[in-house]
Amino acid sequence: MSLSIDTPITASAAHDAAREAQERAVYRKIAWRILPLLVFCYILNYLDRINIGIAQLQFKTDLGFSDAAYGLGAGLLFVGYVLFEIPSNLMLDRVGVRKTFLRIMVAWGLLSTMTMFVRTPTQFYLVRFLIGVAEAGFTPGIFLYLSYWFPARRRARITSIFYLSIPIAAIVGAPLSGWIMHAFAGDLGLRGWQWLFLLEGAPSAIFGVVVFFVLSDRPQHARWLTPGEKAFVLAQIDLDDANKPRHSRPHGLAGRATRGALRTVLADPRVLCAGFTFACSFSLGNTLAFWAPSVIRDSGVAHVGNVGLLAAMPALFGVIVMIVAGRHSDRTLERRWHAALALISAAAALALLPFFRHDTATALALLAVASAGHYTCLAVFWSIPPTYLPRETAAAGIALVNVIGSLGGALSTAALGWMSKGAEGFGIGLVLLGAVIACGAVTLLVAFPARTLRAGAALPLSSSPRER
Image (cartoon, rainbow, N blue to C red; front, side, top):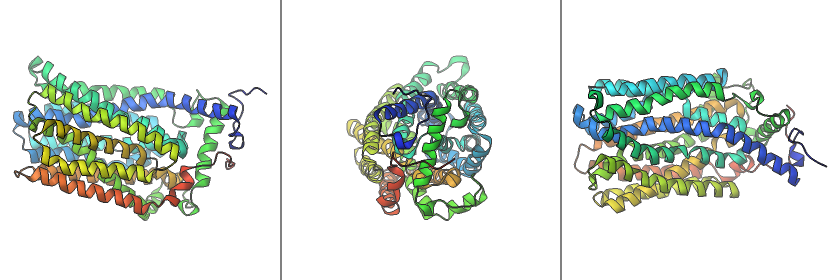
């Protein structure tokens, strides 16, 4: 009997080889449709965050900013992010992905370009805060969006593919930023760092419009899926919900993120523990993005273009490790130890870095280990919250985890800048941060015993989905 892709696909037929091939084809079709655009948009988002790490090599001198002022300004982005993260994500659940991403990307793109006009620390603080307000909801919105399309058992691999955008942004962005600052310096009377903010900010606003016209809000709205494909994808998401632990499926929330959903996740210690672990990973990522160029320069590399090129090397190593770890996590259906060991290795690398700051090769090797730990944790970690969060509270729960992470990132960035005022302060800060990150790994292992994730992580294909 021949099978058409329009033939309704059911979980009970998943063991049939032809149906398994159909399933792979459906998710491959979805991935190719939405992931390239999401990856590119997140590359733009991450470029707007990390380009300040290269730009500060010039503008701190031009504007007379101290390391403390730079660290505070870099961290204030995440304060704005924290304050507006949950409202933005709740709005996404109501008004849809396309309208929300249009608003976010146009606003952050325009504000990022305005950084070129900064002259005082106060102006720097204000524009960074406003960029954070504009970006609020983008990252958790993407993960919520992916949960509309992919079941839990496929999410780690999809997340790792999506998070390729971060190392790609670092691999391409750091050399590109260094080249822009060197090649355009003085053109039209603008400094290199001013050109950097202009040329890397404007595309975000443009692609916000592209997202609005290309993406579909949910599977049932996708004209490019057949009715059979839509039914299958929606049934798999329902199957996810049916297999979640009963205590994680509160009733009476009317199927959407509401104030009741927010109260529910605020009272859930697992969400708070996940937030702390993500704060550790977020702080690690901020340290690499905002301070790695300074570490490389202090190791003896003077030319800004060479700093940008060398800053790409740890990210290149990190992406290789992330891909391998993400696939292994999906194959073994294990999340906790993959994320925890990644954080522990990164914590050790950060703690050792101060002792080798003047050795370029060793410093780069330690940055590479830290980058691999950061990227791997991100890829695996974000497959955990949707595993135990029910659909009714997913938007609020994912947003709260990201809020806590953003707050931790803001505090760690500002603290490292403040501690850099002392001769050995930056090194002490890295050691302390490494210890905190190790605590985040332990928290993940304790708060999420394997049995709490097993149901969602390994959905049986032979189970029957709930009736819609």
